[in-house]
Amino acid sequence: MEDWKSLIDQAMQQEHTDDLIAAYTTYGGAVRSALSNAQLLLGDLEAAQIMESIYGALVAYSQQVMIRMRAEDPEIGGVDHAFRAGQAYGVSCVLNHLIDQLTDVAALTNLQSLDDFSDTLHDEILIQARAAGLTVELLDAKGDMLDE
Image (cartoon, rainbow, N blue to C red; front, side):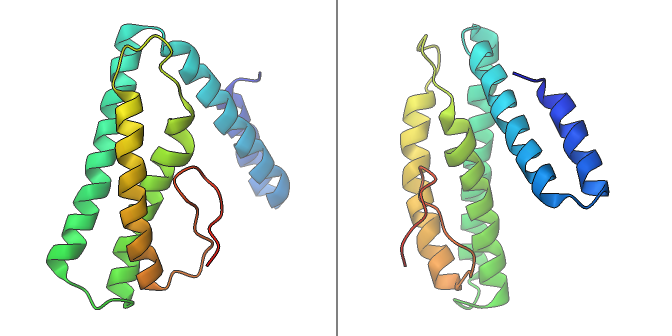
């Protein structure tokens, strides 16, 4: 598999030629390559603990955004509500659609329990995303498109 850094460089060049379809495809290849590389590193205790810490930071950040939205108490469906719901949804998608593809086969971390927890958070965030009236297609915690 190609190096993810090289693929990102290639995609950035494609963007400058306005070949957005090719850039999109190349960025997708970079995602797969980077995740494959991360998966190989999960057998190393230190690398696995770093990934677990990053996962924890993203979970906490997503929840921080949700708590901020609750504290701000924006009008449901208003611009502020849509922004916060979209912000939390975006972080949750990174967790659930990318990082959850990694498997800790050596059982060095709590990634599986964090995966289960982040799925629950994603379901809660989807309630807010729907209430906000986001017009983009919404994906469940496993990356499948939801029917309205």
